[in-house]
Length: 242
Image (cartoon, rainbow, N blue to C red):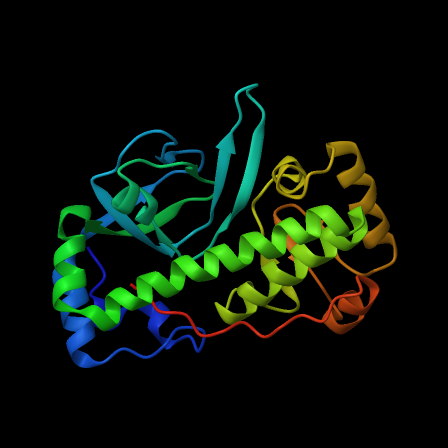
């Protein structure tokens, strides 16, 4: 049974801005249903259009681009609350792909109603613009990490970002959150070889700074980890929810 927008479990999280009754009602009209997909399922494909837009209700995925030589660049990881498919909605086709890494539940919206959404609810439409700007900021931060940080500092930066998001979403319990990605995914995201990534993760684990194994990430002292990575993590801003 499809989750009603007014009963959405994500709305209770402080990371998401509060919605008015009218906004909830309109979002419910915009929503066409829900989609449940298995791990490994392609959701959006680079070079193709998509008649639908999605909000991740549960589960995690991965965004990536495929280069001409067949190699892959992971753009970022997908978490509950992320809005997917806007690129195809504006540019007619996707310039990256999105795959499910765990089982995912997605709220489905009709892309054809996007322009009506902009006309009738400009404030909510601005929220979409805000989300696009945040993605641009994140990519700039990621590029700076790839270009200027050591392998250890890159992984620490990624873990801090992920753990912040997991905490805000209520996914962290006893200093541990689910993280079902592969080491290769992290290596691809950070421009590292798998061997280098594996050795760096082992050093962090041996020093009891962070442990990532069996699909779970554990960080006992996030301040110590941030200090080790020479990073002053900014608090996550509130973000709109669709």
